[in-house]
Image (cartoon, rainbow, N blue to C red; front, top):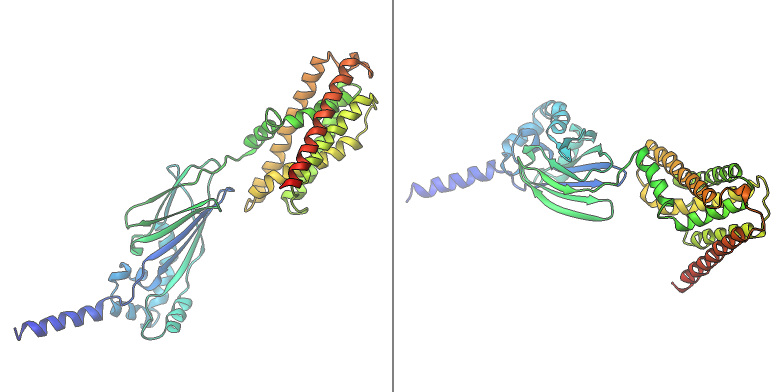
Length: 370
């Protein structure tokens, strides 16, 4: 019994001397944006990581040797960033993702932080490493694995402002997160622009039909369509690049008013050969409406992504508009065969104008009553 008690005290004393006194688990905040930007901010105990041991197992004597032996911390830190980055593993739908290291603790900062915490609490020294990556459009799922030396990493994954998932990632395992990023690329935006008009944009189709009825020939109708596209491309570009502020809900009744006005112009039967100012002005207005729907989804996009959207979306819209003009021309057997005072033409114009006016009133009342 007399021998057992000193042995027990010696064991407890040795454990107290060697154990990490106030170790803490590492944590990570991972954020994925619709633009495909992925950022990973890992907060971890730098000294214990440098010893190659889990935070709870790093001996105080070994940590002291690292921190206080001349140049020991600097030598350990010289290879730490590359080692840390190499051990971080991210895959997107099973394919490896290239990470870049945007921030990593420096030796002087680690030593300063430890000293600031005081002699009794010099460990752990928790500091951030930040990595960034680009995910391809249409990515559905990502998996993340951390350096084994970090131990268990409590990970908070956030998909923009939509939702967040918190999980614990133990050494040697990966955590899976659903990202469901929207598809991107020129072809995708071109098809999106087309589908924005046909079949989704019934009001846009009515507007183009009215513009068709106002023209004197199919050639003039196509020219007006192009001028209209130039107009909405200008305002869409100005809003998504921050040169103009995003519009409010007031733009929707204004767009409906342009449909009513175009119907009125067609009903009058004044087939002016070019009249570029009207389609250009209406295009500027419609561009504000497109931007209102798109601007809130463009935060964090790079220049290349915005350029692809602007080119593809506008080309898609113009392609759909050309289709509407040609279909209308076929239905009316060519504009040259339609008299300015023809019954079919004027009746169609009245219907388009009435629908536009009714939608305008409905949208105005909706704004006033909400």
